[in-house]
Every structure is written in C-alpha cells, then in structure tokens.
Amino acid sequence: MKLIDLSSIDLNLLVTFEVLFEERSVTAAAQRLYLGQPAMSAALARLRILFQDELFIRIGREMQPTAKALEIAPGISVALQQIRQTLESSQTFDPETSKHTFAIGSSDYTSYVVLPKLLEVCRLVAPSIDFRLIGFEKDSVGDLLEQREIHVALGLFQNPPRQTRQMPLFEEHFVGLCRRGHPVVTQENMAPETFACLPQALFTLRRDDIGEIDKVLAQYNLQRRVVLTTPHLLILPTVISSSDLVTVIPSRLVTSFAYKDTLEIFELPVKTEPWMISMLWSKLTDQDQASIWLRQMLKSVCEGI
Image 1 (spheres, rainbow, N blue to C red):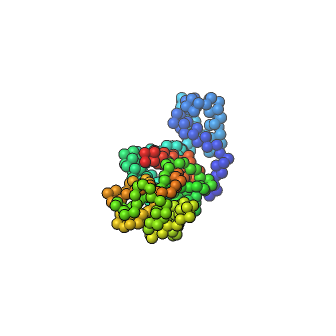
Image 2 (cartoon, rainbow, N blue to C red):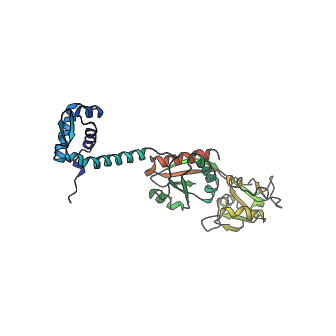
Image 3 (cartoon, helix red, strand yellow):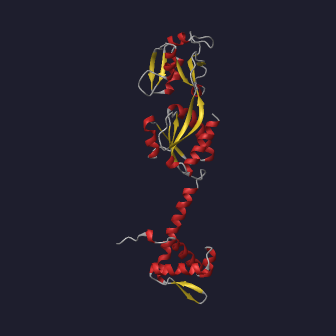
C-alpha cells in the first residue's frame, strides 16, 4: 500500500472537514473558524479534490454529508482528538493527579538531606507521583541526563557537562564530628597539628584515602592518618559514636543524624571553603512541564533546608 506524503497536504483541511461535518453549513463553519465565506468555500473545494468526492451536498438548507464523508468522519475525528490530547499533555502538568515517576541522580548525602522533605511535601500536593534515586559518577552525569535516565542530578558540579543547565540550591561547609566525651577534641583552641594526629574516618567514592581536608592540611605541611575509608556515608555516626575516630562531614548531614546524644560537632582548626550544592538538568527537558515542576519543587524544598 502506497503511503500518502503528508508534507504535500494542508492538515488544516481536516479541521475544516470536522467543523463542516458538525455544522452542516458553510456559513456557520466559516464563522466558527473565523474565516470569510469565500475562504471556507475554497477550503471545501480543496477537500473535494483531496478525497475525490463531493463530501457535502446542499439539500434544502443544509450541507448533507455524502457516503464518503460519513465513512471518513470517525477516523478524522479520532486523529484530531489524539493531536489535541498530545498538545494539551505537552503544555500542562497536574501534580495532583499525575502518576509520573521521576528519576533523580543523587548521592547518599543529597538523598539524606533533600529527599525526606521532598517526600513530605509531595505527600500533600502530588500523592501519586513516585521517585527513583539513581547513583551516578560525575563523568557520566551528562549522558544520563541526555538519555533521560535521570531527570535531574543533585550535587557539586564544578565543570557541568555541555548541553546542561545548572541551578544553585544551597551552600554547604565542613564540620568535625566526634563522640561525645572524646578525650582530645575540645571546642576551643585545638591546633591543626593536634587535629592531624587524631585517627580519622573518611567517606569516599574514589577508593582512595584523600579528601578535601587533606588538601587543606597540606598547606600546613600536615598529613592525617585515615584509619577507615568507606563508601557508605551513613555508617559514620555509628562508627564515630563508638570509637575515638573523628571525621569531617558536611554540616547539614551531621545536624540531621539521629545520634545527637552520642555525637558532638566541633569546629575545624583549619579553614575550609564552602561549596554549592546544585541541581543539573539537560537542555532537552528545559521546557518540559513535568520537569519544570520537579525543579521548582526541589528548589522550594532546599530553600527550607
């Protein structure tokens, strides 16, 4: 069966046919489509050529459909309805009724800090929306966004990939964490040398024992002893509360821990620079209504963190 080349057809003629079929009057159809009667008559003439049939014949005061018009009318109506629904769904997003599933690229840290609040808010305003948390490597985040395996990524992005957009969410900084009653750590006057001598735990995904604090200590010609490295950030409260290890950890994370009665936060004796947690997304989804809603929700939630 030979396929019809739609590029050679004015699809507005299908709308003209639909309105004529409903109105049974060239004058009424022209008024409904905001056309002059000559333009409407010309459109009907083009429809007759397209379908090789009269389509509508004046009988009395009405334009009655031919057998051919009755045959094609249901298909044209369905096709136009599908087009309208497609256009409407691309322009509107109703979180109250949507059953959308969002994939968010997120580390343990951003998940722990951001997701509880996001779920709390969405329980009220978007009860049928689901979320999937996806771990990612920084080098692959651009591909994940471009391939739409994730809708947004949360984290520190100093060199964001091309074809992405970035929005700052909140600033973060490091604090020290030790068990309550630690024999060495005090809130006042701890020297950098004393801190460097303390046995320490380090959260790292790179499988090494070098963290940001080590770069700072190197400026003091100091090197710390890392007794434990772990890719599992959330085991640190238990480890720290039951040993003399200390750790350096993002401030928002430690203030959320449920072990506050056994842990103590201390100010680091060396200066560390704060950093910005941001949201990253692909330019391909920049105008997508569902993705816009998700980004707005994340921004709103993070403003209250």
